[in-house]
Length: 173
Image (cartoon, rainbow, N blue to C red; front, top):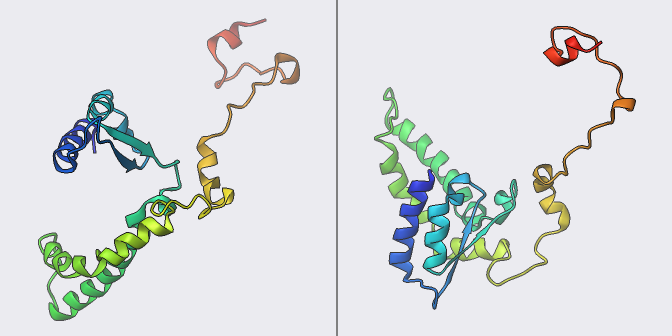
């Protein structure tokens, strides 16, 4: 995904949701850099799209379809691939066989019940701020660390001139 592709998606999204500044919609996103292009952000704002990004490293718990649709889809896919291999002995599965497999299993995983369940277990709809504890978000803390403070010159040993030192350090008396 690129910022350009994401903006094209936003145009498609506006067309089909009919959102506007008077009728805004919420778009939940992962933290992908393509969602940060200035063109896409401006387009979203102009068209009533409120974008909310999940904290880094937490999308496995917060993305509704990851929680309730893609898990079952993966299970169905494993079973369908095993069946395909049993029914096509000696033949190598190619990328051209995947759509036929997906066609049969997608309706099994993408049920209304599974989709609604995903939003529920993620605490999105109905809104439930207590569905997660602070510990559930701890993986995002790795990208939230304050910068380490540099130790002052009195607390670091003198660096010996050597291959890893800079030219200024080698020239110092």
